[in-house]
Picture 1 (spheres, rainbow, N blue to C red):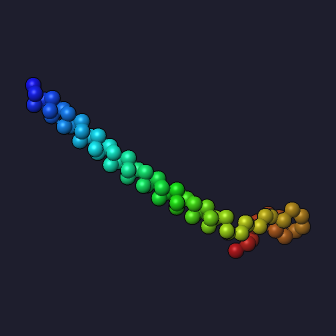
Picture 2: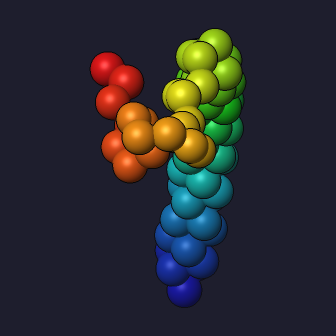
Picture 3: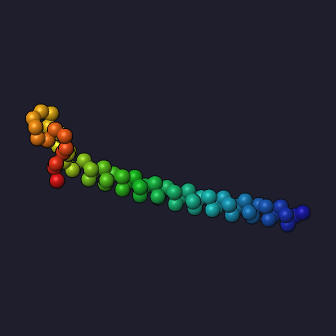
Length: 67
């Protein structure tokens, strides 16, 4: 019975170490994704907004023809 208890404790400790490693990797991944999101947000905000359709007249009221 002593070996069964030792095996269970060893397995529990191994799983605890594995979970700690996974938590560290997840934290690093989250930081990386947050940094990428920040860069993309800066890039998107630097792009000029698209022109809207004209509200009157015979040209530009149906299709936006900006290239």
